Each structure stands twice: as structure tokens, then as C-alpha cells.
Length: 246
Image (cartoon, rainbow, N blue to C red; front, side):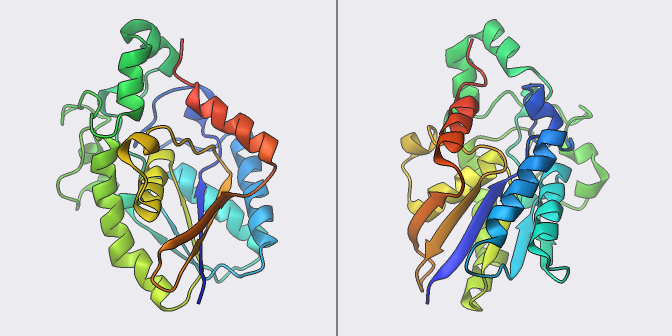
């Protein structure tokens, strides 16, 4: 039996608008981000199947995106589960810095490595830095919180989340929706499609655009496609790719 999985990167956030490295910093959606979430919800509502369960991160931009999508699905009983392992990757000491200005200071190549290399994390946060997640009460019961992460490190926690709480839903023939973040979703794409380390660094996910997966009976990816206007999606992907270029 075919199984359906929808991935949605949260709508535009306040720090997306300002072109800042966000990571685990908990910022809200912009008005445009709200509209993107509404549009995503409308697109998903027109699919020929019902979403049975949804997962999101512990960050407000992903949570609000899912709440808005849920209103468009008109399913007040939709089960929602949050998990910190779906959080964006930690950008460490880059969090709060402007991407363009950081590229001007350190060069395009270095910032590209920090943003898009597979296994090189940005400079770490010190534990006494208020930006470090250990200083956020909602993570107080979690051990080994990251002070900085590469995509490879993000994949480790995302994969654990997938195996422990998401994969079992498909075994019950449920259709699953995940609203999360650019890098936690890229980690899922790498895992599901067995994408190479080099190729995944070039894969960009725009805000608010649903990705539909069809999985086979063994939960292996059969198809993956963005949902929406192709020209608009292509433009949005280019915009993500060019955020930190001087």
C-alpha cells in the first residue's frame, strides 16, 4: 500500500526577512510567513488523501505554520506531536548574525562552508551564552544539547526521531505531515532518497512550499515533488541559495 508523507518548511520568519542566521533562536512568522502557511494548507487540503498525524519541532515558527495548515485542513482532531529533534540545526555563534554581512567579513567561500558543507559545523556557542539551548527552560531535561551542528550531526538526531516516533505511523497506514526547518528537512530528504553528501549541500527548500513523498510498503521513497506553481518554486529556491552571497 502506498504511503504519503508531506514535508513543509515553516513560513517566512522574522529572521528570514532580516536575512539572519536563526538556528534554535525562537522567532515568529512574518505576515508573509503566515500567508505562505495558509497557502501550503490550501494546497495540502486539495490532495486526494487525509492527513492522519502531524509532527513539528519545538520552535514557534514551525509550530505556528502547522497550526495554520491545520485550520485549512478543517480537522480540529488532527493529532500533533512536537519533538526537539526536528529543530533547525544549531548555527552556533553565527546565530543572530546577518548572512550577507558575515559573507562580506569572512568571504563567500567560508560562509558557504558554514551554511552548506555536510560535516563542518559553524563556530560553537559557549554554554554561558544566552543563545545556547541549555539556557532555555524547555530543553532543561535534554542531555547533550548542541552548541553548534553540521548537517551530518543534525541528521543523527533527525534519524532517531524518524525511527522512534514517525516511522511507526506508516506501519499503521497513516498519512504523515511534518513541519520543520530547512536543515532538519534536508536531513530527511538525504535519508529518504539516499542523496549523496555533495548533492544534499546543493538542495534548497523554500519556506512554505509542501514536498510530497510517496513511499512504498517498506517506506522507501518512490517519488518526491514540490507542490505548487513551478516558476514560483524555482524562484524561491534560487532566493534561498543566494541568501549569503556578496
